[in-house]
Image 1 (cartoon, one colour):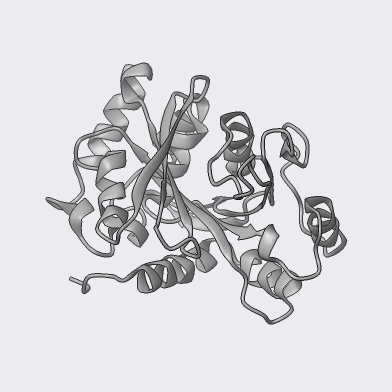
Image 2 (cartoon, rainbow, N blue to C red):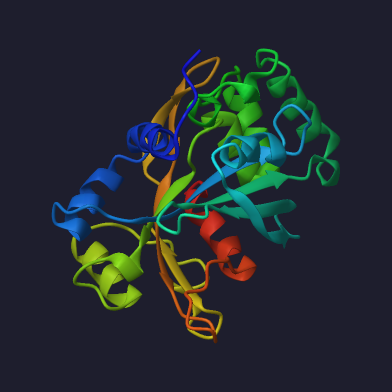
Length: 267
């Protein structure tokens, strides 16, 4: 059992794991940061609304470090509920956690997911390293394909388990880039593919948040019966605008996040 985390050590461990699933993030970091530190706007996680691994189980790790629950979001088409969390220290990354509402899914999907979660050790979600423990279950390619037909979100979770789905560059704090368009152009010029679902830039100054993201890297995943190369994790970029009080908006926009989820779609 690993020891309890600080904010810094937890995000350090998450970043180390994430770079293995999203190798392009390291190159993008160099491209945009030019060797300087990049501020992380937020990290996102996915889960199922089962008592053993529900949103609140993941959130507990952050609440223990001083984070506070903020906005709530619903994604009707994707059958998701989500919350975001903020730390009193504004330089600490925000956290976005979503969960699949299984009762809205087919019996087949529910059975597959419950069988996966049943393979976890008792109280697995309480372990200090749970948020970067990956998929601690066996799932076959046929099961993955069946999940994929109904819910890309569920299929991704079956393959990758518990880890950061994406990190996000805080464009407001990025040297040399005034706009999200400029960031996107630099990425495209360097050969990175962007998620164009709903446009390359989701959101606007009117909703106080603009977001873009790369398409997920593809990595080899070992299923119970064979290995397959599938979309893994991606890198997001966020530009925030000031509210009426002059403070930057710290929430999320459901319509934009809905399209960001599609960065991991099988293609």
